[in-house]
Length: 511
Image (cartoon, rainbow, N blue to C red; front, side, top):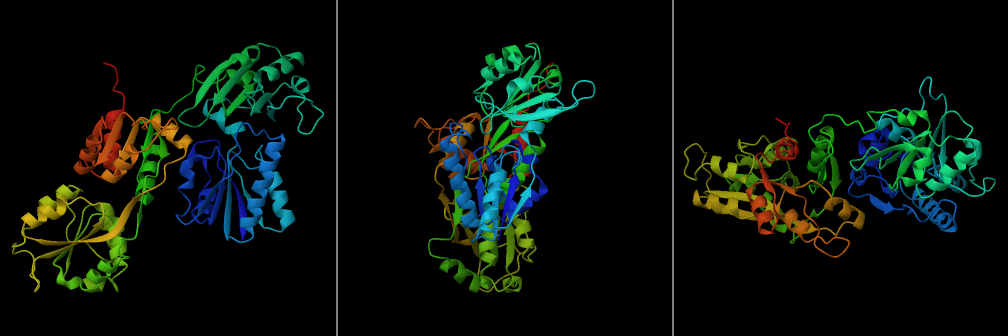
């Protein structure tokens, strides 16, 4: 039983360390801060308990509310650390750089709970770096001082002597200072720091919402940015790409995509989007649970599997649930197996089954086009006739069943799992989704769940201007819900979805 204090980095989920990602993947409990990117929570197992212990901006570190909240966090860490195998305390930036990680470690030590610190990229250094500001630079700054934006009595607990800091020649990096920026600028100038000193403010650094303002110390109070922001004061603050934020020339740089796919498939899409420069917002809308009959029909079909000439799988989830009911792959005997696409085919291969049919067009329509007629002489006969087993979700459309019936097959549809709607995401996630450039749906049920979401004001949530759907039935469902900007991925794979996003979101070069 160990508590791991893991630094999540300054905002970009890609800046999490490999050690941090590994611990999240095996966590029993995750206690996370307000500014931790939500996609990092998806790295934890589905069985992990996720606990939001983030302090709000109005609970400053020095006030009574902040102290009370931190005591509650310490209590939770001790409680879970004493009874759970792996507890991850996921903290923004680095746990020991204004993250109160030291206090949490002291509390754990007093309680006899083992702990380990996994450092993270601090916003004090990582955020200036991504906008081209080196906090140290030969000839300009040979030192850097990181300080919290607290003003008041410099001799009190946590006090900051701004007038003394004004005499330093190096770089001053101020965290949590936007609410007191006017007082900070005044105190630094009172201490002798020239009002003309280059100053930079970076809001939400390393994220898709990153904003940079270059100014001077005497005009710092005029900068109208919010929190979290990093303030850099010193000659290095004038460095960078013409005062702007340098952005790599990636196809989806500056774009934000809402991903509603759950599980490994969604993770694959998210990683691909990040590689192309896009930011992602994970909005879990549905989850798969066991069938309504507890799996009785699925077990019956698996027990008598050899009476079917074909089994058709249209999802990896259906593969997992059906194959779990078989003794092993040998039980299939001469029964033929079809998979709708590569992901489903790979799920079969992992269980020792090589599919007999994977259509070129990886969707139900492609499977229908390539599926043989029931009387086809190429198909080995089975004594019991032309029966096809179709284990699927409760909400799977009847398109496949109807089309194969027209080809002479007797299709038995068996519910392998249910798709149920999840509770509405929190307001912060909803607000971020409403500002996104695109949303991706893999099923009509996801489109319906998104259409039912309400914004913080109670009105229907804004749907992003681009809606990328996997398969014609999903696209048709999205349009029927009144969504505009609907485009269908030519291929239902990650690559097909990425191609649709790039096709629609990439701004063409000017002639």
